[in-house]
Image (cartoon, rainbow, N blue to C red; front, side):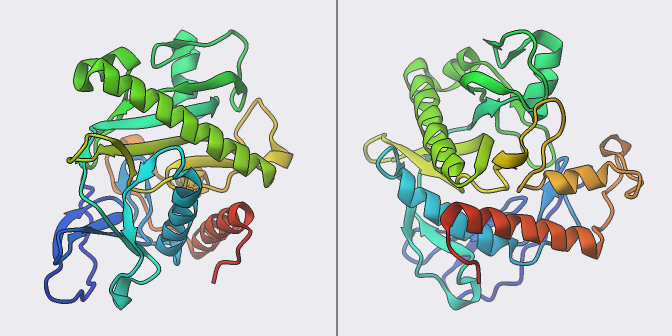
Length: 297
């Protein structure tokens, strides 16, 4: 499987050094030693970076992350230093401080969906957390659960693991901090989203440690449609797939008869039709506007 992503042709000022390409983000070192996080319009699914981009997606992700960072700051510090960035990436980038990143994907689930649903069907548990009988796709869990995963390299699958596995990797004290903080962020996010008619089904967070004092810092993006499942509350009906504001629409199209593609084929996914691109863009913009109350322009 090839998931190589191109380095965008951003003509940044002298002194900016490209250090990393992710599925969606580009990371640069700035002349003063900070990091420049740039959200591109790329979209990924089934561990592939798709050949078609979604216009404005990077700007939506950046604006939404900044909005959420502000509303979570009393729970956990974040890595954003400034939004004063070179003009060529204005609106889709921010400056961040360097951290010692924790090699764990911190996932909180309040509803049964995605890989959690698959694991529940096999064992009535998710990441070692026992769940009651009788849950179906879309069911609200008795309480949100922490279901971490190992961070995979580009093109590989993240692996769901137990809290004990995380403790073996990073230590019990840090593992408990990650669990507690992840669930606090999820609770805040779910509460604010629900007030606006949206259900936050689950979310994936990344954390780093401040190299000076070892404090936990929220990093990367936060509570965006790329890292979270958002469902319209008014149409929530447990028992099957839910309408969504996130990229599930793209995943569904890719495995539909229209795409003539399978994730297990080993072949690169097809380009997205114009209609799918526009509807995906509309979902990202709708999520931003509904959550923030701001118009996206």
